[in-house]
Image 1 (tube, helix red, strand yellow):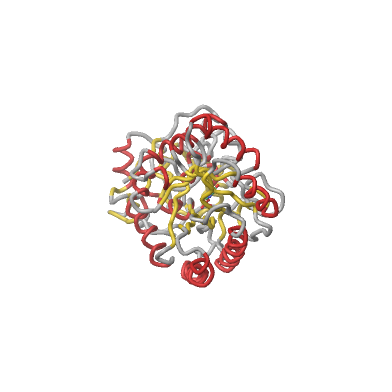
Image 2 (image 1 turned 90 degrees about the vertical axis):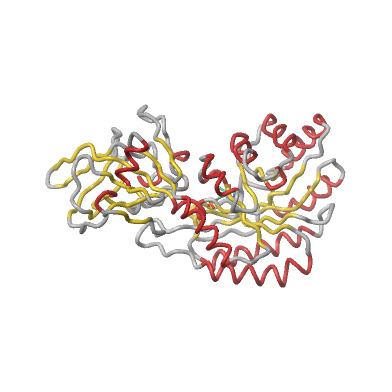
Length: 402
Ligand SMILES: *Cc1c(COP(=O)(O)O)cnc(C)c1O
């Protein structure tokens, strides 16, 4: 787990101890993200990945504008999945040609905004390609597109599989040559290809194998492209550890594999292509905490419950209900007592009226009292915006970047 600082026996975000931070924010619960940890994350990736491999941030993992602004100064490009995310990206220093727009079911108004902005649209179907062409002629602007390919292989060990087999994402690899032939007769600027096979993978060997097969597939398809390929997006899917069973990803192994692929396969064929990997969770996930306050402490038939003022309506994933098959505890701490010995077994629950609102089941923590701050780690990605905030009509939590 990435290390947050400790100050005066408390967990600190951006150097501010969590009790003081709660005063500064003015209310609990809240999300806090650490700028230093974001910066270090990008530096770690740069250290291991080939120098001519570009890094894109997939905004949907954490679209807080301040986080996106900070990352935009560190990464090479931004990947968005909606018109609002696109606006957030276009508010940064990144020029439109460093913004890509992926995702199924893009509506015509979104396509118009994207074409007008000049971002790269990652085409998810033949019919979407036709709609983009129509939007382009209506606006008198030549749309910039990349073809998102649904690979003819699938990646094992991903938390969520998003490629291989039948998919709503991308165009089946075997249909891409025919589409490319059609696109040659339209006024779309076909920049290259995109392939994203899955998310939350912690196995470097499997990721490396997927990258090898992705490069092989996309280079094969590049032969059918109407123009020289200038953009090759290899996806990502780098996972982070959430539970004691998870081991951090072996970045050195992934970097070494990419180095070889670029040197031996990509560069001889496509010397000028921008080769990109796009990461969401890996960049932001470990840099954020969700901070809640203990409202009640009760014992029921021998089991001690800490009831906090947050819950799954803000941090769904920690309750085990965001795509997980088996619920496991996310790392949890008493934020204002991190120097004390864990000596008490408790169950931490949220304030929602459902047994699903379980944040820490039989966890061992320093004894916590009403008013103490319970901190959930690994809350920087797919936290607030991936949670059902309207459920039970509690107020929205603040988000801060320090
Ligand atoms: C969600 C998404 C990502 C980011 O995935 P992570 O697992 O958070 O790294 C990247 N690319 C595309 C196309 C996505 O939809």
